[in-house]
Length: 168
Ligand SMILES: [Zn+2]
Ligand SMILES: [Zn+2]
Ligand SMILES: [Zn+2]
Image (tube, rainbow, N blue to C red):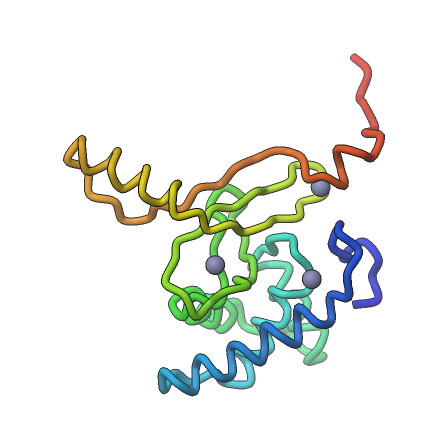
């Protein structure tokens, strides 16, 4: 966590986020009888390197670097599948990337505010949005599988930061 570019926008001690996420994962998996193997735990930690969704390839590279030998892509994908299944991470479809869930114990699908400038992604879980999707779909006889919402825009930090404009 020495790379300053990985620091989340809202200056906080991110090591707490990581420690909390790992502790939650430990207790959640223990209570469910799910096996959080050393590898799965390490992959979760790598997803949590920042609040930006990370692609499987970046995680694979980190893992290979940590282990000093190339990690098998399939192993990483399987670990990510497990983490998604357990609700410990969410897949951001539009970015083809993964982000850690701050509230994995609760059944939710999440809405994501994705900053297009810095990449920070904040999860909100607003029951009104969930209900609106459910009701709107039901009224049209549509069966919802994945009600996840990905909202693009600018986070507060990036709004106050002068943006490098590309002049036409
Ligand atoms: Zn953090
Ligand atoms: Zn979540
Ligand atoms: Zn931002």
